[in-house]
Amino acid sequence: MTERRTRKDAARNEAAVLAAAGPLFDRCESPDDVTMADIAAAAGVGKGTLFRAFGDRVGLVKALYEARLRPFEEAVESGPPPLGPGAPPAQRVLELLDALLCFKLDNRRLALALEGSGSGSPYAAEHYDRWHTLLRTVLERIPGLDDGDFTAHALLAAVRADLVEHLAGREGVPRDRLRAMLADHTRRVLAAPAPPA
Figure 1 (cartoon, rainbow, N blue to C red):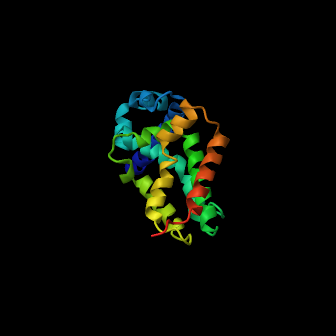
Figure 2 (figure 1 turned 90 degrees about the vertical axis):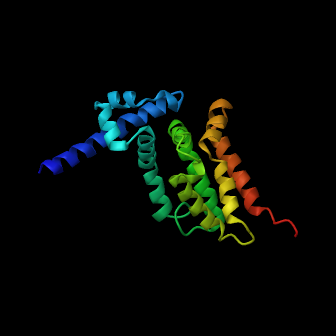
Figure 3 (figure 1 turned 180 degrees about the vertical axis):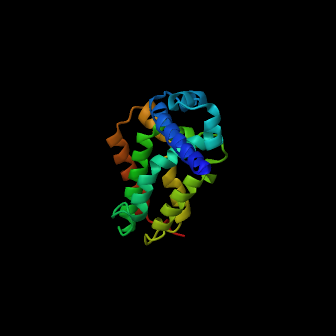
């Protein structure tokens, strides 16, 4: 009984921490401004609770990012086309990149915190590997596209959090314009014929 209550308390504390951390990242000027102490205070828990539940700040950022990404992943894995399976591959690539761009625009500081977390190469991160694998798999179904692996990397570079922040934040490019530019770029990449050997 005590162990079940402890697990229930831990789950409740984790949910409270994620609920409190989200708005802090949404409102901050820089993700570095959000400290573990800030999050603990906003959640009404001790800092020790944060470290027990998430290990460190990177673990907390990953957990929050994954929680927000979950509905998007479910739509990609089992939702209706064109975002979900079953759409023509070129159309699905466009939808996947657009949805990922919108997610990063809606979660700019959190995405920056995750991608700049200092946990090694961003290309070795689990979330990057998932999106690269999915995109590569879809790209490989497009006739005439010879290198789905590199093309997936190149297209994902267009939705990196630091680039999204630079364009949307520093340069002030409107959301609809960013989406249109990404779609145009992606169409050009997918339609470009291979050069002669």
